[in-house]
Length: 143
Image (cartoon, rainbow, N blue to C red):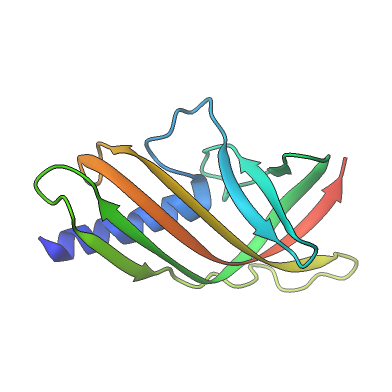
């Protein structure tokens, strides 16, 4: 059972980091705390399969495009059901810079973190609490 849960946790991290929680209302946005050295800003990312693109700063017109991730880790805690109390910690796979550094592109190295809780009918059939974070390489533009 633990192997199944660990596999599901890794899948959850992959969808959580990249697309937000699978159980989220598709009309809602997924909030992520982002720190690029000038203090924490909150960005929202629609729950889609496009690796949280576009990510929009809540308080400005800045749009962030992730180019890669590293040192991502997370934790899933199962809050109810037969596996209530189970905590699964896991590292995510490194996805460094997808296309390498490009001439003329300003790439920022930023840390991110997020936390969410909700019912996940597909992977756990339970209410889960997920926390994760890591480093993301971003290209940003003001609109």
